[in-house]
Length: 546
Ligand code: ADP
Image 1 (cartoon, helix red, strand yellow):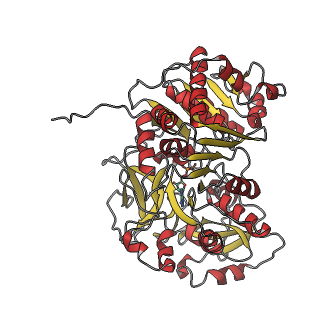
Image 2 (tube, protein in one colour):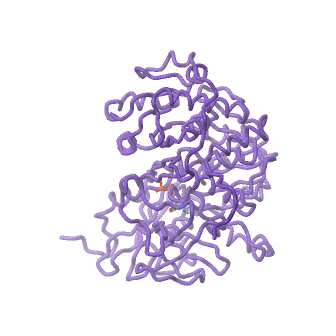
Image 3 (spheres, helix red, strand yellow):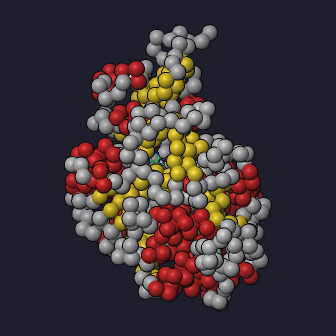
């Protein structure tokens, strides 16, 4: 017997409709690419997005067509998103930090027809124009005045389109399973693969992230998403903020400590989200300038592991609560968040910290399991580590155009490629990426754990650990350290620092001091490149191959 409730398709245009109806005058503030701070409201944003929809229809865009954006977080970028998604086209967010070759690969793979582009990225597109044959039109996200300096033949001006088209476009009216957004994984794991979100998956992700124990956003919040809309959907904030009528503050192209601090204070931001490196920069800026955070209450950090020093720094010096979250492009992206349970909340803060530094627990709507390489479930004892697998209504089922083949296990779980533990409180902790874990004598060594400790050495700026071939143990850890400017150090100093903090057999066989640790397009250490560089490295005590 079926239920007798209404069929109300979960399409994301309804989120902005809601914001326009009930939070019409709530502000969206952007640091524009042109420079000045620009203010708009949900009502205006809604109207302008509808005009963009009509412009797209006039350009011949049909449901299912891919329309890309290559842009910073701004109000205009949101107008493009909703304008594209509202008419059933697919919004493909391009990551400008990718190398041009990868960008072209992705544009071609997605068969993008139109690209909305910020002034900052016009030169890249012009240079590689010939390598993107499916693209019929560029829309530069600026006004007529700034179009004068744009060198991109045939490009249209965003503000012209807004002016020329009526705000009467019809949104929605299609199946909630219709494709809505497309985002490629950054390719740290091979060729980039497309994750094709549906309206339903984005809508459900929005509702789940709004839970109090997840992001817990409210209409009284002022939210600054530093995390880019092109990197896993700004963790859904471009949907969840209008869903609750929160004020949005968009940082545009400037994400350095001083610029972010200025917006946090001038706009009264209460909640923000970013990767650890951004918060590291902000902390450094605040300390150097004796800056204050007078309104910021909560920060979510994810994308890579949050170092203890950041969590303590924000709490002890500025009274800001940091929660750690984990997710990936394939999980829309939020998978877990380390919000204390009632038992953990009852502990003194110092004891809570152990759990808060883990990647956290699953909300309703995300299922997690740990398995061994054969797929057998492993215990949730906090020490056994295995492959982390996820299942749920906003987790990828298949990559765009079937890349990578069948990616689900027999129970329908997606293998995240992460290696993790889960403790008795349900708190998951990432110990490594499966391909980065060091397999020594049949046992696993967590490269991340050694890195996190090594980077705590006062002389270290950045640390990376990789496995290097070893004739007896298969692989042994090699520690790479980039020192802070002006510092010198010895191998012994670092090994002594690790002593007692990790199991003895985890101790790296060697330490190398380097000028640079390569980072990938999403700001994470690029181990693929490091492994290539050190593939012939001979560890001490090992005879070089003949
Ligand atoms: P990629 O880095 O391949 O582009 P994503 O940006 O989607 O992919 O990143 C997903 C990966 O980032 C996860 O699988 C995990 O390895 C890592 N990650 C995300 N959040 C955290 C976290 N809080 N701690 C440690 N690793 C994390």
